[in-house]
Image (cartoon, rainbow, N blue to C red; front, side, top):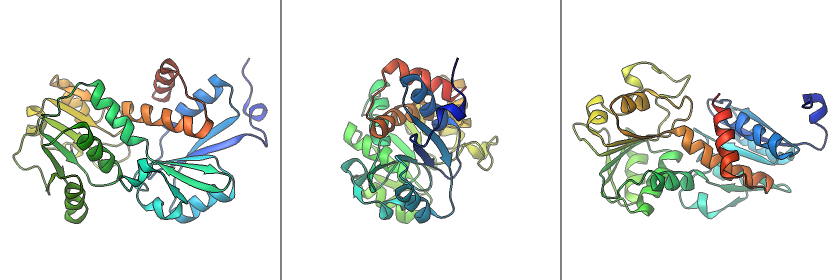
Length: 279
C-alpha cells in the first residue's frame, strides 16, 4: 500500500520546483513519478511568479534544491544566479537552476534534448529550415541546428532586434515573417499553440502559414502542453515527419532530474514517466 502525502513528506523532504508563465502538470507528474519509483525523498511543484528576482531569491533562502525554468523566464533569470555553466552561457538562456548549498548554478538541458531529437529523426542537415521565435528556447534550437551542421536556416521573428541578433550570432538569416517561402523543416520555438494561450484552437494558433506547413517535409513543435498542438495536428494529418514538445520535455526533464538528485533514470523509466506526465 502506497504512503499518504502526510506520511511521505517530512521536514527532510527536498523540494524541487518549476517557474513558468503558464504552469502545467507535465513536469510535476514526471518528476514525482520518478521520485516514487526510485524511492527518493523529494517532491516537485510547478509555480509561476510576477516577481522573478524574489522567486529566485526564495530558491536560495529556502534551500529549494532545483528549479526548472520555462518561458518567459529563461533569459531574465541569468542575472539572479551565481554560476552559469557552459550549456547556459553558450546561448544566454537557462532552463535549470540547481542550488548547491546556497550557490545557484544555471544550466540549459534544452540544447541537448533538441540535438538528440534531430539525431533520432535522422533529419538531413541539407534541409532548409525556418525557426519561429527569438527567445530562450529559440536560442537552444538555433544553436543545436548550427552545431548539427544545418546551414540554410532562417529565424522568423517579429522582434527585429532579438531576431536579427539571434540569426547573426549563428550565421543565419532573419526575416520578420515567412512570406511565401516554403522551408523543408519548420520549427516552432514560440508559445503559439500552447494550452491557455490566445487563439489556441484557431488558424491563428499556427506559427507558420498553412501553405508552408503543407509544403514542408518535417515539423518540430517545442510546445509540450498539449503535445498535439494545431501545428502538430496539421502536420500529422498530412503525413509529415513530426517531433513534438512532449519529446523535448521528457529528454530535458530527465537531465534535470539527474542534476537535482544525482540519479539517472533508465530509458524505460523515462518513457513511463513521460507517458504518466501526459495521462
